[in-house]
Amino acid sequence: MKIAIANDVPMAAEALRRVIAATHEHQVLWIARTGGEALRMCHDKRPDLILMDLNMPELDGVEATRRIMDECPCAILIVTGRPQDNVNQVFRALGAGALDVTATPMLQGQQDGAAALLAKIHTIEKLVRHSGGSQAMLPRGVAPPAERHEDVIHTLVAIGASTGGPAAIAQMLAGWRAPRGCAIVVVQHIDENFADNFSKWLGDQLVMPVRSIEQRDELLSGTVLIAKSNDHLLLDEKLRLVYDAHPKDYAYRPSVDVFFQCIARHWRGAAFGVLLTGMGRDGAAGLLAMRQAGMHTVAQDQASSAVYGMPRAAAELAAAQLILPLEKIGPFLRSTVSNGSH
Picture 1 (spheres, rainbow, N blue to C red):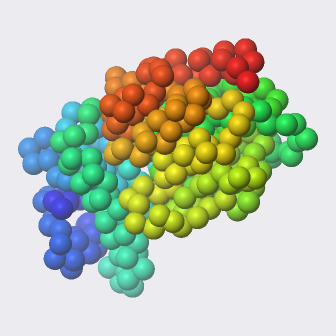
Picture 2: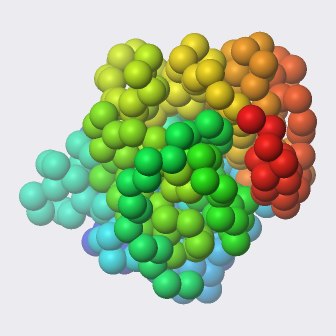
């Protein structure tokens, strides 16, 4: 792949350049020292992937990501010193269209950091290839801990998202308290090392409790449950949430398709499948399986998507009963769930 680097720290930029050069599989197309320079160079020579720092002069990594995705979209990986110390910026960048985040490898003792970076690049390369290349990319206080209830879960809302998903999920669920008996499960493409931070960040945005899913958890009433593993999330025949590494060769991890298909197979109550912004095709086949099982299915429209890949694939398969702008998906869920669709 042709990879660009946007980083104003010479030592960090050099560390990234060396990691890429050592692979003999990728080439460094350019190095930008500011977010504004990255935007200008992307217009001139668009790469397959940008390794984007968060803190840069002129435009920071969040605004540079937003501008690039609006004007000359390509795959963007946030690479910054300590992602866990910049949670809000990281999720703003993911909301603006970045695909993932990882730590910057150092020049000295960089083996582990280099391996983690190259693993991210390899995954993104598969996503870009499956999506037809970068040219196909169109432009309050912490919630209290969840309590276990004896409520019978009769309604399940399943949400799948990738690029731009964190901000879209937060907007869609903002201000909503799901009624008793309704559980919400989110499958967002995000590295397991950052998934707990995503749960905490989302919990700050919502009035409902948010928690990460542990192995063999049960569905919880009025709670947003977040997949937290690079393994796939499944709903088994006893309606427990479990993680499984198979299929191992699947590019999307955790896979929205795998979870949606489990719902179509095992769930007997009312169910809503919602497929939001994201690169690739993950979730489209699973959403179709849910629709064929008689469940409600919704996909985000092109105009409100950071990247119109996954929802477009669902539209092409006629998997979505409704294609709605993001701002209308939340109100649809609230009215339909509250009106006793179960």
